[in-house]
Length: 584
Image (cartoon, rainbow, N blue to C red):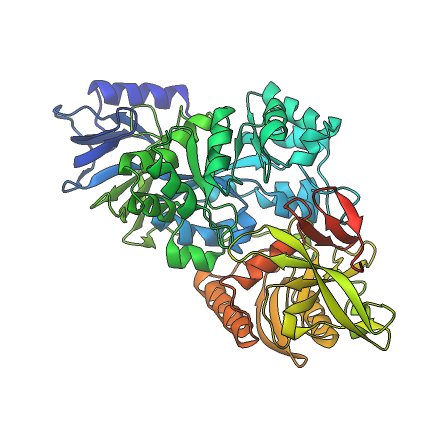
């Protein structure tokens, strides 16, 4: 927080009564308010911009000649589950900051589902030490589906109010439709609590249209990051909802949406960018919000409009525009220097007037975060380590079953039907139909629940893969061709305190330990990404053709995205929020 003395010094620097701390001369500044490029100098005092008008000679303690580079406000990710990057926040810095993202708006529902309020407090304890900014979208639905899943922690209205009072909180996190359309009082209370504190409430309006969407907006949800079609975009804009265009590891929405937006010349001032869920390997290979911006420009969006979506639009929507989103006096000196606007490739990245990254690499040291031991010991398996735990009983010679069919590069899925053989009273997968056995195993040490179903689209011809990243309850989820390998996955995941694994014939082919809440690694990003590459290669060797099989696996257990979700308590029809039988 700025002190009065610091503010006085900044005003004196703006008046020329004291030297600037930093003068970045000879820049082409992106003016996101007037939507133009201005040739000028950028004056900084402390951590704030104090001068941008061209033509004035100013004294400065340090002068940098930008050589005509573009000065761009650094990027804001409007909605991210930071845990999905698989890295602790200190390790994530080396991946995202060099790309020009210096602000994350984080919904930490994954840690909350594992470890509750105390887990959240422990997770964010060291945020001020990072070379980028984190603001919290307080998780509104922990658990996501009460009565339909077992979680390690819960956030009720009292815990949400406590978190909303944190100084770095900016909103209530995404709230799924059932809580609003069924006007459930505890969740609406959380919305009103956020509004009472001058904060917005984020939406999650997957699949909604017409009257249902109108009722959802009536519930005072401000935005939606679940748009899949251009009709979704149009309808949300018509209702005054901000559209957050997502491009994650398994949620690839940007191409179709931006193409339509450009084709139909839709206004973009109420559109933002996010990744939602994106593995660190994909961040390293593709980029972060810079990828969204550059892809949008490549698809024909005006560069300044694309920059606005990643900067000013996000800051205004989340009521952070008093400090972020534009290069004007009084705002924090968070900016990128780039040689071009198409593409934008950050040559230098500044946070609070300090150089933090250059030519694709961090140039500051980041102190490792030291979490409490209990946050690294969250996998407590009561059952699931034996093949017999995955038996699915049936009578007769054949049985018709419900099957979860995944959609490549999306997190939605559909119910399908299949006929499977019954041998010795047990249902078996059918590799010729690409119908595999899938199971969710409770891992919080509460009840030992295991539920088994069938899934289509993973393509495995042998072996199994497994994960403790399983939205949003984060129990163990395994999919494979045989019960013995499913059990081997669960044993391995418990032994390494969480992570990803690929198994065949009882042998571990590849693994990635994620011991922090069973969701994240505190190892260097390059090591985590290398292990994830080995896992993806192992999944391909087992027969999968999915681009991101482990991200896809992590969403099959989500009971809030249509149509199906498998939890430790059963197979859920997301449309009715009821358990349904695997057997038809």
